[in-house]
Every structure is written in C-alpha cells, then in structure tokens.
Length: 406
Ligand SMILES: Nc1ccn([C@@H]2O[C@H](COP(=O)(O)OP(=O)(O)OP(=O)(O)O)[C@@H](O)[C@H]2O)c(=O)n1
Ligand SMILES: C[C@](O)(CO)[C@H](O)COP(=O)(O)O
Picture (spheres, rainbow, N blue to C red):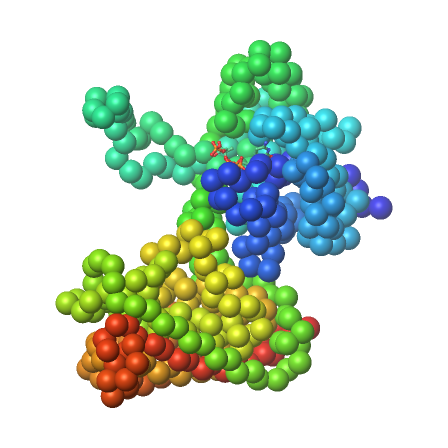
C-alpha cells in the first residue's frame, strides 16, 4: 500500500466540448493514439504523488476509469473517478466531495489543458500555503481595447492583466468553505481562483507556460498535435498491419474540375494566374491523391473518412495541413513513410518549371519523406484533354516503424 499523499488533484474532464464539436465528450477525443484526458493524466502522474480524482462526463465513467488505470500504473489506488455536473463548478464540487480525509492541499486542473508540464503542477503545489491560493498565469501579449457595440471606447492597461491557467491550488479547508458559499449564493464562477477570491481569500500567481494552453477549438487540437509531432512525443499504437513488419503499398487517385475563385493550389504550391480547382478544401488533387495512397497503404481508410465534410476544420485547408495530419495518423498506427510518387494528368499548369519546388514542399509536409512528381497531358483525350479538370494518381510505400513495434 502506497503512503497517502496530503495533496489531491481534481482533474475536471466532464465538459461536453461544444466548441471543439468532435462528436464525443472533449476529454475522450484523441490527440494522438492517446486522448486529451490521458495526456492530462500522464502529466499529473509525472508530477509529485497526489490523490487524483477524475471528474468524468456522465455515462463515460468507465472510459475515464480505463484512462486513469493506464496512466496511473501501480498508483491506481490513489485514483477515484466521479461523475461531473452540468457546469465546471458543479464538476469541481463533485470532485471535492470525493477527497480523502488526509488531504490538506487541493489542486483543480482542466483535463483540457492536456499538455501542461508536470513542473507547472509541482510549482503550484509548492506555492500553496494554508491561507493562500495559487494560479499559473501568462502575461497578456495583445493590445487590448474596451469596446461597446461596434465602437472602441478605451484602452486597457495589459500590464495589470494575466491569462489564468490550471492547475489552480488551494488550502483544502478554505476551498471547501468557499465552494459552500458559492453554492449558497448560486453564483457561477469561470475558475476556482475567482470563487476563492470572492470568499475573501488571497490568490497569488506564478509563471504559467505556453504548453498549458486549453484545447477549446479544432485549431487548438491541431496545435496540440503539431506540438507533439515537433517534439517527437507522438504516441503510437501499432496496428496489426504495422506489427506484421512488412512494407506496404497504397494507391490514390483524385480528380478535380476547374472552377471557383482565387488562385490555383496544386502540389502544395500556389500558382498565380492559373485557373483554380473546385473542392471542399483547396482542390489540391496532388496532395489528396497522396493522402489516399498513404492511408490506403497503412490500411487506415481514406481521405473522406479523415478529412471529409464531417471535419469542417479542413475546409479550405492546404496541402501541408492534410499531409502533416496524414503523417501523424501513420505514425500513430506505427508506420513511417518510405516514398511517394505521383503523376499529374492535365494540360495546365506546366509542371516542369516548378517540379523541384513542389517535390520539396510536399516532402517537407511529410517530414522529409521522398516525393517524386511526374506530369503528362492526355493528348487532348478525355476531360483533362478538354481542359475541364485534372487527374492525379499517386502510389506510396509505408514501412513499419521498428522503434515503435511492440
Ligand atoms: N460541466 C463541466 C464543464 C467543464 N468541465 C471541464 O472544465 C474544463 C474547462 O472547460 P472547457 O474547456 O471550457 O470545456 P467544455 O465545457 O467541455 O467546452 P465547451 O465550453 O466548448 O462546451 C475542461 O477540462 C472540462 O472538461 C467539467 O468538468 N464539467
Ligand atoms: C479554468 C480556466 O481554464 C482558467 O483559464 C477557464 O476559466 C475555464 O474555461 P472557460 O474557457 O472560461 O470556459
């Protein structure tokens, strides 16, 4: 039996994630092969030992329990999962009700701040006293204005402001009495520090960190994914195909008609003066054929499944976004990209002058994997020959990543 720590961390994960709009409670949405909640718990368990209370969305307590079990390892005895409420404040209340008797310091942490460094958690624990609450905060970098309707009516001195993060830490007894007062008054606060201060207590701030940003919108989720890819922290769960150890090939085709407005986007490049292609995204048929070839090679479905109209965040997106996400999906499934070859069929644009530039742009978006491009006309035959649109065929080879094979 592990010694019982005198600190507890309440991880609130019961929000619905309306602004993320991912079709599932936000905390259970994957950043890589691990969910937002799992990443948050990985950070919590990498910090100083604490009792951990996970506040789960109603009906998803079992999922939260599984995530907690995997993150906690042999510290699972220190974990409790409780059901959240309709507001963040109600969810924190549910967490407070599950505290163990020995706990004297309580941290409240948003699961949505999934990549918060463990050092930030430790710094908050170290700064809490028996009378003072502590929040991590970042300076406000934008110039701020006070507005009224459409008018700018004044300036705001940003040196007086800070952007609050979590975890926020408090002496238990004072936080419990502040929550009781808030319940009695019926006032809803957006964070625990505001609720604690409203009860007359002092809150101090320490330095927050850029990594502790809150995943709120689809672009925040992309930011988290990019961050993990950049720092080589993507977690994979090798698929059966990857565990086979064999290289695999895939084929992708895409066709787009000329149409729409603006410049042409093709092979990751903008082509000023060339007629644009129509499509849900930017119509870059070269990138889309490559995506299908890669997904097909890895056995991960197709472009419609991962980037179609059910994913509005990709509307208008350019090649680098599609290709970077595809590379990440492959990495999560345990594959690295061997090479890609694509053939463009159409009358224009004339590819030869920009072939090297296009290959380099596509390769960079795929993390340096070799990409070769060829181009041909169809001697006036078919829709490419009549100048109605273009067609692209791509093949790709993917290779199981030995370093990730279980
Ligand atoms: N009823 C609620 C609402 C929010 N939270 C948690 O509080 C944190 C901050 O909330 P936010 O990120 O704004 O989450 P959502 O309420 O899920 O998002 P949205 O407002 O877009 O619906 C999140 O970790 C969220 O899971 C919670 O536990 N219970
Ligand atoms: C607690 C919090 O994360 C502090 O920044 C935030 O106040 C909660 O979420 P919301 O974005 O204000 O709804």
